[in-house]
Amino acid sequence: MIKRTLFFGNPAYLSTKNEQLVVNFPEEGKKEATIPIEDLGYIVLEDPQITITNGLIRKLVQNKTAIITCDQQHMPCSLLQPLVGHSEQTERMRHQLNASVPLKKSLWQQTVQSKIDNQANHLILREKNALKLKRWAKEVKSGDTQNYEAIAAAYYFQTLFVEVEGFSRNQKGVPPNNLLNYGYAILRAVTARALVSSGLLPSVGIYHRNKYNAFCLADDIMEPYRPYVDAIVYEMVEAGGHISELSTSLKSQLLTIPAMDVNIDGKWSPLMNAMSRTTNSLYDCFLGSGRKILNPEFQKKWSPSL
Image (cartoon, rainbow, N blue to C red; front, side, top):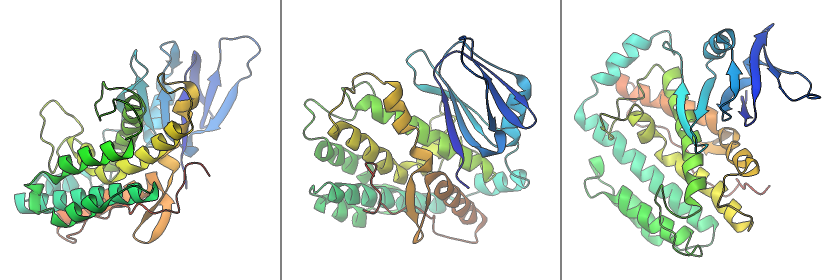
């Protein structure tokens, strides 16, 4: 089942009644709205004048609905997740924490290979040269000791947005960096939600190890999915609209990320469902019942303009 993503960019009062999310607006003439809580996967709270009841928060968390709040720059800055995401959480976390260094190096190798290959397929979709990326994907070694992940990323973005004057991938760089930042923040929330639902710790990574980062594993696992965000942003740039400011319309397009169709293990499914398959396969690797992490395969069928 595809879970809905709700975005609240104006003042509102959010409460619950009869397993429904109830939305009331302070503006006169706006009618009360209700949405079944079981249908919700993500809620993005942007306006500082949004009030949400504790009863609603409890029901959303029990439904494993990710609650995302935004900062003064309207960028996602926090994620509320349940303390217990899986019935076997303690055992699963123990397997994760006991993972050997060779296993983690192998998992990172697979992750980088998949990411670079998906970047190459995206460039091919845009009729751009991807020969270097295809070659680098095959040359990635255990642990990516040659740092092909960073080398490929630099080439990929330079090639993808070659028409954008002064562009380089930088969080504080020129547009469409602002769109990429927002899209990646949503993707990170999708990944963290899936990891918690699989009973894993999002903060303990297989490669990323920053002690100030609470989402190291999410940052690892989301890598092969980044080209899907890039594809949406590329279409937005090609459309020729005003992208220097994150308008409600632009955010609405980026908030479709969880429901995007992706191909994984030969089957098409919404990205949020595919991410759950990826995180479950990751646990199988930690458990020892598998050695391969299941990642998406970027293919031409998907088109954000359709």
